[in-house]
Figure 1 (cartoon, rainbow, N blue to C red):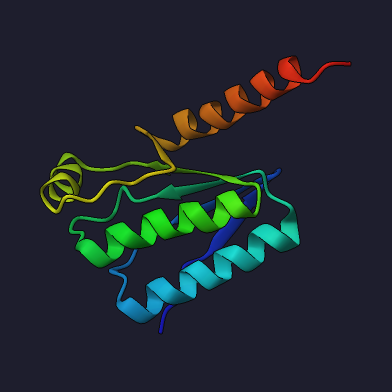
Figure 2 (figure 1 turned 180 degrees about the horizontal axis):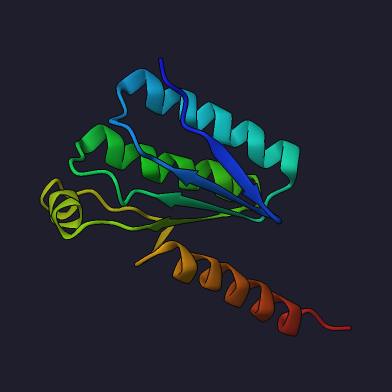
Length: 126
């Protein structure tokens, strides 16, 4: 079984899914990502799905589950690079990606996390 690499950039973890994930690969990714968030103290997780052409309900639920796990571990999840066909499929399947923010590309995903951090810094009284 091929593992999806998890890259660390500052306090953000980046996952770029470049292979067709089977059910076991998805479960391994969830586990690996949860471990990586804890070990690194990451504040954000960005999942790049630009190479994903087809999604099913299991993959859609996986994205929502990863977001929930990350949120419990105090990290925000952003999915980037979603193709229009993937978005249409998720909507047709009736899948709501609650807790998952989206951005068009990696650069915009990182900017979303920076905006969140800037908003937190302003909201914290000194």
